[in-house]
Length: 309
Image (cartoon, rainbow, N blue to C red; front, side, top):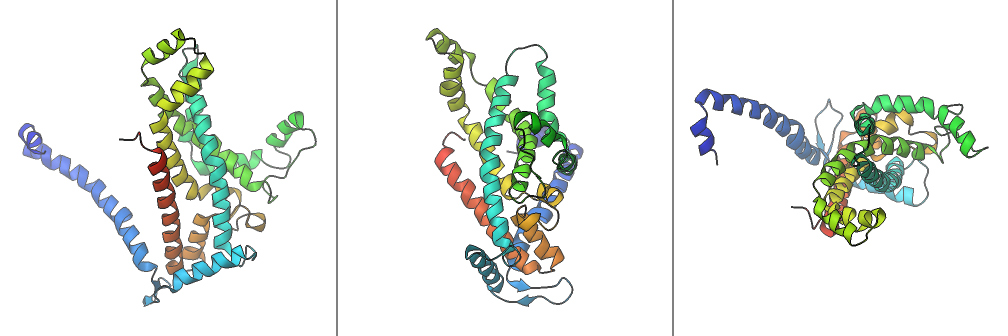
């Protein structure tokens, strides 16, 4: 495989290429594979970052399961923060992933039209994806205030409906979901736009000759042809949503908002590791989150990812 490369390149060029590649490999091995294997190892130990590590077997996993069972029995957020984070992140994922995927397809279909000024709209759609999530969160905190712009606009659409988005436990997760959908749909719309432009025009022309209208062409040609890309976007969306941390940390605060209604699994893992100084339990909870993400994405790809090569 490498012989044609060595034939064309000088020794100096080859050494330069390997030097550049080795940097990325070292970073990946250190912060990727080593961190992952060390987390597995750490989940069987009790440690405070200073003293010696003490082997405790499955005790950290037992404490995690006790938290889960207490939460399922109706214990409060303060007693079972891990269960609260799990419940919230499942609901958040169920809201965000389907809507962001559908919205990204619609935006891509609109951007694929040959209309005047479409480049401006393409940039406008993609701009949120290039902005730091923390900055976006800070802007939306101002917009979601009780006397903020969103409630002002809602006053014209639904008079009397003025929720306190960030201080009401019934709305804070919805507010975070809206921000996430707004930010991520622009990112995935680029992927769908590239997939749309790869669909042969002959298929659409044949459908038009058969009398198929725009809606029928969208649902019977565009959506089936986008199936591999939809699978990719859903899988990436699941991975990102289940690990959500930054939006919750900024919008709900370090405590997770009122009654822990904005608390997530990633926040609980962070608090275990760096607030309570229990990295062993944090590692055990990380393994649980990894299993959830792995099983969810594997099952989805197994069922719907037949078109992916």
